[in-house]
Length: 64
Image (cartoon, rainbow, N blue to C red; front, top):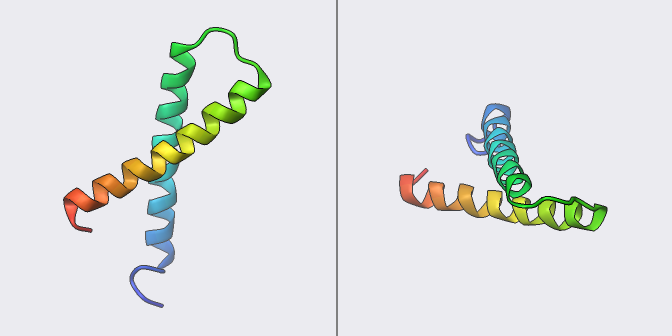
């Protein structure tokens, strides 16, 4: 098992993505008022993409 596939590394990456996703969803909920099912799907998907980009950006800056 390499360092990149170690369970601790995977859990840390998933935790970071979940934290970013949660923060972006909360921000999205603050900025809108009525929430319908389609808006939940679009908002959740957009937050997931934003979380991936935020993690990639942080890794690019810290060289890890």
